[in-house]
Image (cartoon, rainbow, N blue to C red; front, side, top):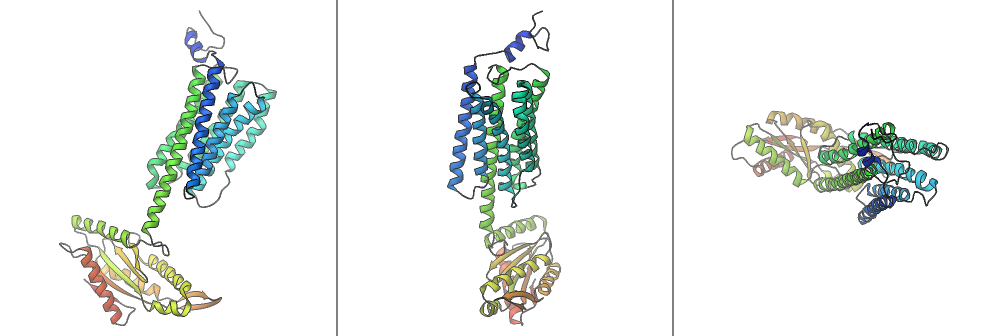
Length: 411
């Protein structure tokens, strides 16, 4: 029977030789250098995009990760001409450090607090101690390659777990795309470990065979997949942030007029289909100009922020608050009848009339402010959003004429 030393499949030595047999080294060097150039070019492109806009968070670290991966492949391509400390040890460390930068990219992109990637850095520290040993003292290519793949698998799993822990519905598609890339990368490293532990492998990273070719292709594919996913995630986060900024009031973070009208239109259509009523409140701070005139505009802004917090504490979880302009606010109360809206309005009135502590020119002062509210509810049929705003507005002005700090309803 034709056998190849180390082949675990009797009678299949030809196939085994084809997959794991030696080939021209120059081909593997060219492939490694091509992959390195591709990753380094991607790194420069990511860096250029990042420098063009400071709002694209995470791309700087991602550019560094691509550069380290490309640098590691380039050093691996120089196995032989360069000493082992560069072509093996440093090349492996650069690949592991790239996963550290990927975690830093993830932290910067999706979290507000600064955090040190302790786990990934611990993996790098461990490899700095172990990789020179298995390279020089043990001098076993199989052990060296298995150790490096195990370290990569641990880092990829850690980064994938961090990404999986995010619960953001508006990012679900891009998160799934990126997680698939990380999963494939982890599977690739796990398969490499199994092959290297149970089957014969070349004694050099540049032997050149189908196994090495497929290995390099899978590594490059997974790297580009994850980089593409992170780039998509970055741009989607920026788009979401810009949309949020365009739809919210900068002082109170409440919905602005445009967004609030959109909420009203959606609720109006729902009521047309289901017949379930909804209500609208318009809230106006009484004599707010006096606060600005006597305490200053900074104190006025603080009063508005406190009043908004108290309004948010007064409404239900499904209600939508918006800033209509100046000291005037609006509230959409889905599935609320007039009676339910009056209860919410009374909670708002009572909470806001509580004194507010302010610091004015270094001194603590109490500010007492009240609100007037106008209420209306959807009448069904041909009742429009504009009709509701008009009724609520007239009820509000009637409340002001009645002495302020009160609620009037235009049912």
